Length: 490
Figure (spheres, rainbow, N blue to C red):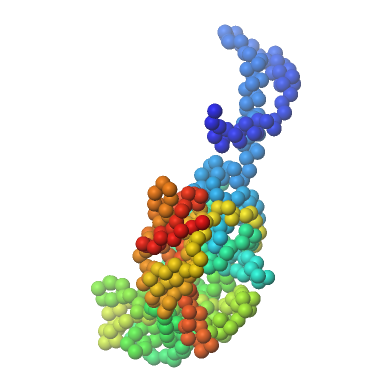
């Protein structure tokens, strides 16, 4: 006879119940004798049936009580990757908000976390729009390393309005191995974040030229060259420009070489003030006389210290990991976003410029917890070939198959653009004894560049990850197919 999971849980709960049937039978008889008998015909009540009913009721209550956070989550929410995660069942309460890490698991350089956020203060602050910004801290080679890039994505998978609880699924992808011991750091929870637009407070015809500085983050051979302008306006504290709502300010604006530059500065996410209905403006939008959006020709994002200074790519390359973390966490204060639009300088009055941003309500606290997910090496397959596998100008050096998807890593001959051309549009498939399975069409690919002593790009590396929508049975996989390239796994 096949017994499903729910029945197993109930039977296990029953086995832990000790019932004194003699006392129950005696109390049932006493209650029956003490009842007022009305002059109507009734069926005789079986004492044995009453005892069984009480036992079943007691057993049902006990079964519900013995279900832990993980078991209830699996039973009630049925998460897609619930079969491949390890129960964690840890929680922290701060600022009236309870954060549970329900389950997690790391697989090579990818990981998945299931967690929940609940308002236990009675203020009903948590809704389906709640947002968190977790940072993961891990120890690698005696170095404390942290990052917040959730390349796999984070989503609210379910919101329980009756308990003010939002359940999250978080997928993580990193360029290096994610250990089975990591710390999840959460210092901010945003309850609401809605968009907001305001008219730009300066007429375009009143704008003049301004000084510019080289963009310290500019790279010639970048995958997205229009996202990293070569020069930006000199940032300022905004004292020479009209104030705008919230904690942001216009740090510079000018028309340079027939282009409109708009620069907005805001506190970094970690530095911003917390409270209700706070306004942060961070971008600009331009429309022409027909009401059509004017696409920017370039833009850049930059994080700076209190003196509006930052480190160049070359300077960062010469720092240790600890120095980089110290600089990132303790020195940077502001985020600069500069947008550059093409305009007709002879028809400035035909344009409309607005600032874009959002209104948020948030709270700060400490919901940090350490996660231990256990060994998952038996649930991973790696590339069997030694050396590299060529895909265009990309040389793939490692391939890993896990229940979450397929990751691959290598180097690029030439520059980043050549690597993009080699890997763009290539779907990732799994070869199994039962046939081929599509993992993802055109998966995400990331690139990083190493610089020589003169700050010139020297080498480029490539990291890709094809996400699976459901758990992969890695034991059935015999090979990975990237585009038309067949790679055997062991």
